[in-house]
Length: 311
Image (cartoon, rainbow, N blue to C red; front, side, top):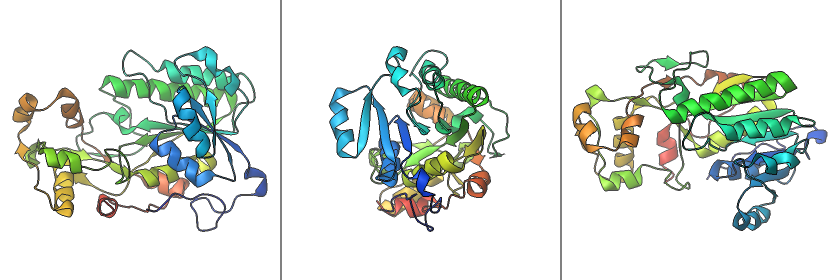
């Protein structure tokens, strides 16, 4: 597996960093699969901190060279110690699964503003904030039309972080991320869905979908922390331009499995879950030119073909 690399090499995505930056304090908010990939790339030259609400997880974080900080985004009073603690923050924690707005991000913003805010913050948002674009090419300047409650909560999170940037001078990067995949990520490939024979839409009704390999996403997160421009949005996706059904057909062929059955949209509404249907109701082709130009991210897996072959 290609691991994301950042320090200190002229061949890595950011090049060699000055010595004064090599022991910066990077705070991970939401240290799941992608956060751990970022941590693996940064240690040991950067002090790694991670907010954790789970006592059982803290020892595992220590074993990875990460200092756990007891705290819970749903309990703002536990976040006070975060003030002035980190030079850079990677925020990958999702909003609550229900309700309006993102009180977790609001609580984090309030904590970071209390004292010596970080130099930069990168936030893992979602491409869903664009809503349905009818298959159009989508750049970061496109107006937001979030349709689902989960995407609307991400819009609120972005708004709170823009406020942090304007009010405190933090260099905020908003990363709009599509479907994340990787063979070494739990549920990170279409294999299980193909084995279940879950249908996809017929070509006439199908939608464009976008992807990013988890390792390339980690590289983009790192690049945003050091290279992202102030209050800047970046589409973080690979170069693949496939409709969803074609993506699953490609995966089936690579794995030697049966291609999934195809349904009309009318048939799908009676046979598929509302959650699955929601992913089939939006079509867009995200443009990643800004990510490549400004963050200078070079994709290890420019299309899903390269990434799925690792499975």
